[in-house]
Image (cartoon, rainbow, N blue to C red):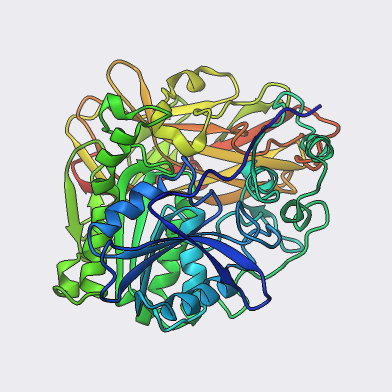
Length: 554
């Protein structure tokens, strides 16, 4: 029988006034309304719409609301449809545009509202901001989404005949049966050693006695319900955005996809402000104090973290909502140079002056800037993908990568991981911008996953992952030339350190592993060991392209 922990709604905060907000279809959504002690004047409102319990311990919303109250805001924290105290079906993503719009309608009708609303929040409650913006509601004046994306949680979908695609996260199908399975949260994980995930989900659903409509919309027969029925948010009226991305956020690729899309919409780009921090999805910092690197934070620790988390949004709202100051007071790009305590500003990302430097992988395991490396005769190196012995994910919880801060060096010692390293750097090197790699691969199996991890290797041999990317190839018996996006980087590599690139065919359990037979990785089934091949040297040899802002990699 499946084992799980069920978490129901926590008591509503004594500081809040409970409210029920009627949606257009009659469903009532639960909200906590936080108002100043004196309600003589109507004021500005910050709306937070989330699925993780507006009163629960996980998100600290009562403490956040208190912090906003002290700055003169009214705060509305709302359980999204079907979650905790809200009515309706818990259906991922698809109701958030209309529910956000209806909630904004309700707020502006309240005596304590002056008709001006902004939104704030992380992850799914960053997504609900984009959804509300997509409605074009005139009361919404600005949003401050953090560590999120408009494509959050979307399964990988392949067009007919498409050979190259993304690799599916395991969380994609687990999230609907843990966080969007009825009103409560179910803390549950499969037995990762079995890998018959679909069967295990069915066992879990039987144990809890009800199905998850969010899971059933995606597997095994997906129903493509539009999450933005009026078009993407960028088709709506543009509003100012403070867009926070974490260098180690596992959802950062979704954020960067939105950045690229915003650049194609001048009205949105005109008041888009990018903030990039050395954090992971849960807000842990690379250089955070040891006492802050704990899984369960005390109320005192949370209060100490609130200024770092909330003050940038408050400064942004002060300008764009309250008109105190000029938009020029908020830099277009504010970014932390990871590995240091230096925060920098720029007018664009990547910052001016970054140049692309190419490192070529060699048969001896090197990474070199030698211009003659591509003249070396092409050769293939191989490794094995064994579904019974997968390359492990470096962190137990990808969302809290910096809580664990894992040493990746031991992974490179495996026989099924190829490793290529530079010589120790003679000077500090600053990297700022996109990281890409071009590779030519093939397999004796039908489907091949290619995982690349870029590491900073310290003189003591420990290694920190600083960028990564992955792609999937079908029809892998035929060679495939891949251009793999390893994401964006803003990082200082210190003198004496080396850069290392790991190449593998699995990253488990963060990503669903290939069976080796072409069988559905989620359903499981027959497996086979595959032999994978990578080209080195020649025009198709592995090349890593890095954005160098300062210093020399040669």
